[in-house]
Image (cartoon, rainbow, N blue to C red):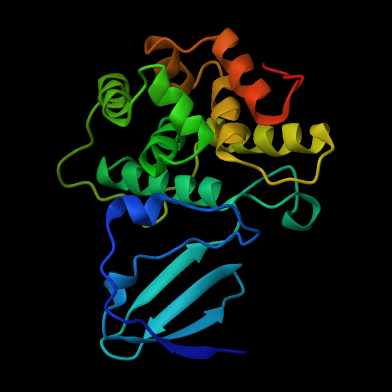
Length: 229
């Protein structure tokens, strides 16, 4: 297994700098360099299509997603997910853990988009008054709070609706016929397509509707035919 040892210099960065992302072809996530200050890291690809970073002193293990889970399609048959989409998914999964939920639902997918914050989908939502804190509040109102002593799994499994939302994103991208990446906009519209899901209900409560969904789609790839359920 090929590997390289690298050292990170003490470069101070802000949260906004970490989130801002220039378009590139890599599907790997940028990492906050200050988190590994003073460590030498061994980088290697695992069999799970993730990037593993192991620090020699002290030991540091980090797993970075390079694709998102789908049921209908194998990873070899679908376009790449954008770095923003992957980061949004990871942040949504983390938020589900913070709320101590047993699963990652469409509500978490939506929160992940807003936490990542730099994508066109996130900017559109904020421009229409849909912010992370509002979505989080509506999530708790709708789903309730978990028990104090309940601990979520490290990677809370997707709900059936969240899985269908990701599959919808892949399917719509394949229908478009272009060779670009699957983006956070696809995830947002996939969440909206699951009409009975928590994410869709939260969007409706906060003023999102079919007209806004079409506006999002048109800003993404021109005229896109959407097959909402």
